[in-house]
Image (cartoon, rainbow, N blue to C red; front, side, top):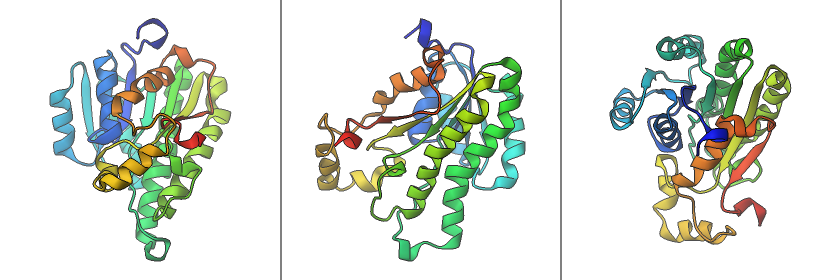
Length: 250
């Protein structure tokens, strides 16, 4: 996927790069020729990711649920390859607690990591994008951005916020050449969803609710990711693309 979908030499910051969808995205873009800085709180997993990738990569260890580290984290991200052209906010947590069991601490951790960090990191990185006149912000939304799932009240609130945050980012910054969009994956087996896929009946039930008839595999995200990261999406901003096999269409 060259030409319109070219990401060579773009500087990309991917949060949540130590596992799951974030790791896949970081690896995919590094393999495509981007210079990728992975951010996550687990140093060992980040090191493993770097060892397994081709191309130019760097790692920044940070707990993004702690707002006090976000300014320093943004500065550290820029130290390796320069200020990012592309910010991908893939770090996230899902405590899967019933509303009756949610604690203030768990609520704050979920909202801080899933919703606050994407905004405040973007706020730190946008000025350099404005100077270049080009930038990409890609958030990770969810089926729960629009649907209520059992034991998902704090996660759903954060992902509903991501959908509106994406539109608000587009309104604020797209006139400067910075697009803001979100990918909303359906059911993909990752560390975050292992509890779902551990139950074969539940996993099959989710697959049966799609139009395509299966759950997602990480390779299904590559095309949409490359689209939002590249010149192919120059006139697309403020949008949420559901990559869910048609789950949300039924």
